[in-house]
Length: 393
Image (tube, rainbow, N blue to C red; front, top):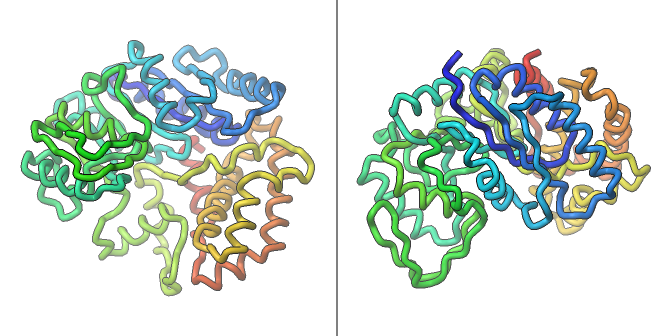
């Protein structure tokens, strides 16, 4: 066990299944690393009935069970997007955060807490100042090229000479660990629009944009943060070269989809490998909201299902495959905890809605559609296995 001097800030949807996993993971495993867990809960873009909101609030407090290290906040509509929610969390809890802060979104989970402990210890020993999973997410790639150039010049990353280093200059809020002293209470975490001619100060260099630039969540913060830190650790889910079996197994497990590669099979030791993976990122799990709410057949009016029909009608089966992949994983997660006492009050509702959804997918012949584009899905048992590890089963 390491010295507890870290805080987890979580952006979450109002989903009982994922929150049950999250709290069980924290109480059983991650509380050895974190002093506290602050959760910002969003109910989605649509107005919820007061009774539904009250039920979620009561249920989440039930999961908390008077644990003073856990705190939920339920912000207003203007904080529904992830960037605004992160801002809200930082503004409200900055003074109560410990020396290290882990930013996470509702569809990301720590699989290997030992690796997290290693990173927190390294931050405490001054080996590096942040751990980030690289991303691009800007409309102006000239900006990324300049950022990477300056990062290389300053040898910012600990694995500076690796061929996988310096993929981008920005990071995801899906898993981002940083010393608190490099975060300001008024930092900007939401999507940001840079105007043409705007000058960016990046590690002491001044970049003047010759065209406008849209940037996604966490990009503006990544740019500002980079002028404060000295050294960073770039975390990659898998080897960027994908030229070995271990990397390939990791790649397809994290992607959840095997496309145009009918010859790919997982090695027999895949279950052991899953135990050693650091994190798992579902990818936009917010589309699965409200599977705990029974409104007879009206579940099929959920935007997830209406979008699938629209995409099928225009032949966009690649998007359909991504939506179905999330559902495929979500059901596998349910399998890992379906008999837990804490989920008992929602179990029948989930089973009812899964039946409706499965019937919907049979009607649109999802397997035929996916076969037509050479797509198959990673076995659901892999994810049930992973989430049993996450909750300590």
